[in-house]
Picture 1: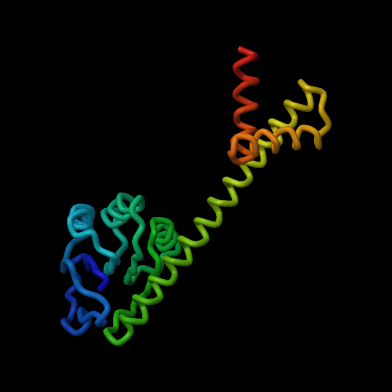
Picture 2 (picture 1 turned 180 degrees about the horizontal axis):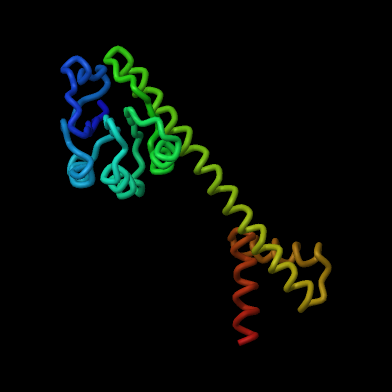
Amino acid sequence: MLKVLYIDDGVAADADWLILPAAYQWVAERATAHSLPAIFAREQPDFLLIRSLTLSAALFSSLEQLHLTPKPILLFSTSNERELIRMALSLGVSAYVLNDWRAERLAAELLLGSLRFEEKRHWQAQLQQAQCQLLERKIIDRAKGLLMDKQHMSEQQAFVALRNQAMKQGIKLADAARQVLALASWMDA
């Protein structure tokens, strides 16, 4: 069962709206934006459900503190200011629902928030992997360039030398390239 932390800014929520689908359970009710970080740390929820008439500085501050511990966040608000919505999304809000907090739609909204959260995490992981591969490619190219310059090798010969060193030591090609660069740096010092 997924634990949901409910935050609001004093909005009078009707009891019907607070009924969660069977797969979810409340861990705290009626917390405020100011109390969010402390309650979040104590309760360790799986999902945040925020209902706020206006997007306040206190809410943004709390979301910023939680940004390091990503969780799906579903935010219901009456604010349709583009920059405020953009800021909320940049701070980890998975789904932003404008002026529509009907009990019969809550299950669908929670599902949407979860799916958007998972999709964002997937693309962030893909981006991080691509950035790491690019960085490793740059390191390998620098090491090949160094071998070509200092050892008078062709690009192919430099690559083969790096590959052979990596295979001999049982390490990744980028790690062998780092070793070459570190050794050259040490020799130049």
